[in-house]
Image 1: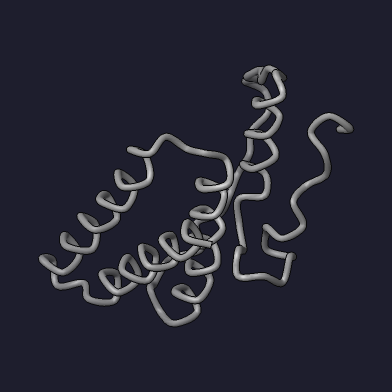
Image 2: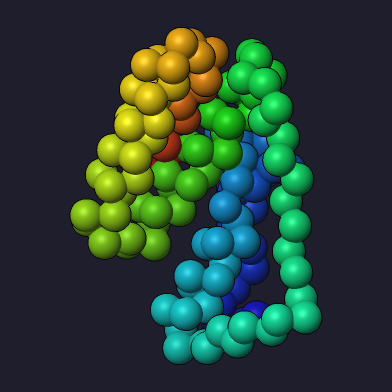
Length: 123
């Protein structure tokens, strides 16, 4: 832990900042940058429950914090330049598909996601 450092306290759900996710991803990426290796262990399972059964204001607020955190981690960990626009394009396509299917709440949710990821990337 001395080599990699502590978790970035500005990231994550409990941070109280606009970047409400991706603290674990940040820590793993920094570990790799310091030459550590990751090992896949089949017997260990990480489970995140699906929290978006509907796309109401609460879901949009939560997603905004998550996506801002993800965008920030992509930026501070120097993701390849092509990767960020690719994720944004995928989200745009999701919004367009939702609109085409008449699911305007989901389209709005995707739009909020996109804006927040860009915001996280820019800061």
